[in-house]
Amino acid sequence: MDTESTYSGYSYYSGRSRGSHRHGERTRDRDRHKSRNKDSRSEKSVTINSPPAEPLLGDSSVRGGEQVQDDNWGETTTAVTGTSEHSLSQEDIVRITKDLEDSVGLDCRRYFTLTLAVVMGLLVFLTPVAFLVLPHLLWPEKLQSCGTACEGLFISVAFKLLILLLAVWALFFRSPRAGLPRVFVFRALLAVLVLLFVMSYWLFYGVRILDTQDDNYQGIVQYAVSLVDALLFIHYLAIVLLELRQLQPCFSVCVMRSTDGEKRHYNLGQLSIQRAALAILEHYYCDFPVHNPALLSASKSRAAKHLAGLKVYNVDGEFPAALADGPGNNAAAGMAHSQSRAMIAAAARRRDTSHNELYYEDAEHERRVRKRKARLVVAVEEAFTHIKRMQEEEQKKTPVDVMDPREAAQAIFPSMARALQKYLRTTKQQHCHSMESIQQHLAFCITNNMTPKAFLESYLSAGPTLQYSRSHWLARQWTLISDASVTSGLSDGCVFQLKCVDFSLVVTTKKIPYIQMSEEYIDPKSHKFVLRLQSETSV
Image (cartoon, rainbow, N blue to C red; front, side, top):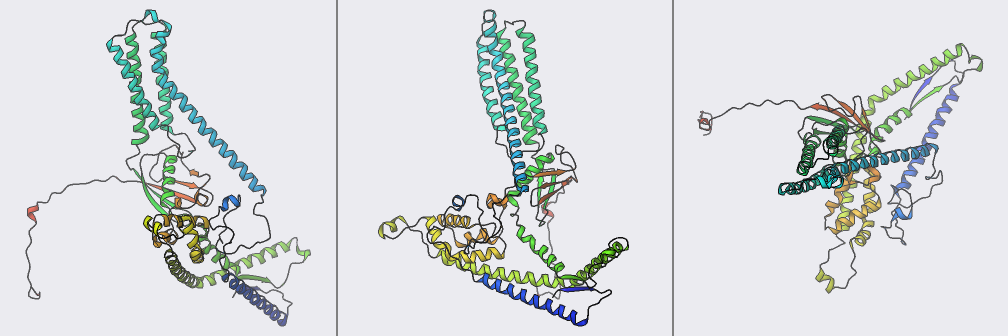
């Protein structure tokens, strides 16, 4: 029953008119209640009908183009007139244009970085070869003969360059995991160091060898060998800075999802804020359950329902137009202030009993979930009893209709579809599982000879985010929000956010404390015991 807060001023309504007004309100409420009951009964009578002319596992994505899988995949399709779901507003066009610009910028940045890395790699690997070849091309008649030791250095240079090539390929030329907002500081420093190092070698080579046309070819070969050795040491430095430095845990981070409060803790090493954010996102997709905004709408709808039940009536009607200026504004402001205070007071009175409503709503929801779960388990177990894996000998003896896993899934799916759909609706998971994905999972379980319990595990409990379709969890872009520079390292008390469209991840950093351990030696021979007997004991 709605709570009504009535303001009475200079009222000209009679008692009869007020009674007829309230009677009309009750009549309209009763009519709306009856219509809602009719609608709910009509919804409960919907049956599952699959089209006979099409297979259940038809490729809806191919047939429907860009159509999105409907949540009501277990019921008959009803056409509803209204705005087309393919219509585009001005905001949609702006958003699509922005996404295209962002994707073009990311692609250009990625290809530019790759091109720069390839050019620098060619410069590094061709420099020792150029040191050995240029004397033979510019002054071959002045060069001294290369002895046995010089020829052995050729083999050393060749194998060291091969080792360096494989090491650089393994460390640097890997597919990028993400696009970071800022440059990686250590990688940029290593690139600058290599560039300065190679340019210094070229400068020395040009001044001391090219200008003087040195005839000691063995010395030139040893100079090239020293360059390759130095490049190998720089690569070792890159392994220490990029890979080994972050292995030792130094910080404990707490990651909390802003919408439902889901929380996880991770240990990280010496990382910058942007690389720590990347590591957290990699853990998020594997450890956090999928974000389900439907579970968050219950509290919002409950609060909206409480506020919607409050009605404020102004029995005096609107203010006359003559009072629109001057004192009329003060009167209107006072009336609005009084209405707001009455709304707050009525909401406080209803809040005293709202916990009872919440308790009974949760109890009713748990009862419905248990009921739907029991029906679903029975339906799936009965459906799995209708199929049997045939051995090769049985296929030769009995000429029966043999089905592959896809056809078997299509055959037994209708018997469990309604129970599964009701359970998913009750637990608000219907948008996470389409009919196509359920049938594919059913065919997978049949192929691998899994039990009904193994099939139901994906629907009875929320799994990690990567378990679901990419359309449900793949964020176009994450935004890193931090007070400090994202290239600075983690520190004690550092807080930053990872924000996407629907929610954000709030990350809090704590430094792992220094642990002081001491040793205490206990002689094994000191473990001696005496049995103490008392008169009250039964021994």
